[in-house]
Length: 373
Ligand SMILES: *[C@@H]1O[C@H](CO)[C@@H](O)[C@H](O)[C@H]1NC(C)=O
Ligand SMILES: *[C@@H]1O[C@H](CO)[C@@H](O)[C@H](O)[C@H]1NC(C)=O
Ligand SMILES: *[C@@H]1O[C@H](CO)[C@@H](O)[C@H](O)[C@H]1NC(C)=O
Ligand SMILES: *[C@@H]1O[C@H](CO)[C@@H](O)[C@H](O)[C@H]1NC(C)=O
Ligand SMILES: CC(=O)N[C@H]1CO[C@H](CO)[C@@H](O)[C@@H]1O
Ligand SMILES: [Zn+2]
Image (cartoon, rainbow, N blue to C red; front, top):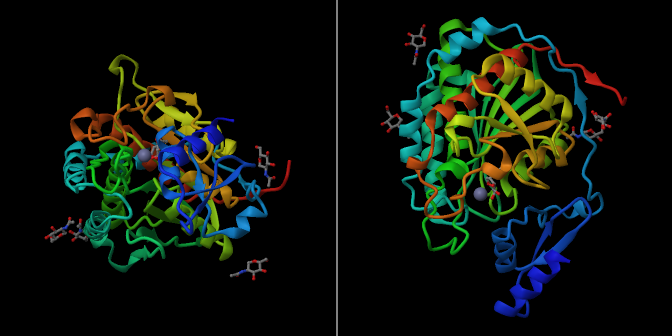
């Protein structure tokens, strides 16, 4: 089997030491492996995606995860006015500046000191962005036990049904897969672009809220996960905790790689159809058709491919829209060449429209839980 032979190669290159700490990773709905950190890296270089479930031994008893709960989403989209009012402020220059600062960190590898510094910068940036909302926007740091880079949650509390959480996620870390601890990883597209897309959506939504005081009935959260590259560690911590606390996540939408366009004659978004919620994904199709200037193609990215998987793993409906068909995505990710000049900020602005369209349609939506069909 492919993974097994990769692993025997790994232990041939760097043998396991006695007493070396092993991590438990899950690479499919049925397969769990115990590997060293070096083997983890080797699998990642080969494109194997996984959850690192070392901190969650209970996952071993239910490898498939919880069954995803379904909710109804709007069939008719009716908020054009609101969407265009919010989007008026969308500014590709602001996104460029944010990304220039964010990719300035040598790396955002979650185990490095730089990864902590980049999280601190991001936290300050988010405080500035939401300042005009005062304490109607709250920020939480989620400290993870095993590594320094914290995750960040920004919450805008719903006015009527605050228990319903609509989550927009992205991961803040980056990683150079050759030597993560020593080589630079600007991580502009992977996945700085997703972070900056969420910052910009939050910035213009804040402006709108401050101006209109049109508070959503449901709670809106923006999440900036640490340690995605380590096996979805940050998001897994957060969603597993949410599930333990019986929190209700009615929709989770992940932004991850939003800025690369291979062929400008055929610009499109990639709507991920595997390991995502079909109902939420169908709703996003309607949002794209109504509010965006480019079409989508349906595409797949495999098991545990980004942080939305941590939501689905815990029974929450989640979706992922990436920059393009999965086969046409940025070839420079995980290298020193994942840089700003290779990205399109107009393309990122299309992702911002997706977020704002979703907020406008779901912010005041009365969610109904659907029973088993
Ligand atoms: C936040 O705002 C303060 C005051 O305007 C500014 O000095 C600081 O550089 C800003 N920080 C970030 C990270 O945007
Ligand atoms: C927020 O709204 C208040 C009152 O309308 C206004 O004075 C203030 O400038 C706004 N703040 C920002 C940052 O837009
Ligand atoms: C969550 O719900 C379960 C089942 O209803 C209950 O046993 C548990 O105590 C709840 N946990 C919290 C933190 O409210
Ligand atoms: C939610 O819907 C999907 C298909 O749309 C279905 O496979 C799944 O069983 C439903 N989940 C529940 C909890 O009913
Ligand atoms: C969906 C996607 O391509 N996301 C990228 C962001 O980070 C993950 C973690 O390494 C990459 O695997 C993905 O390629
Ligand atoms: Zn990556």
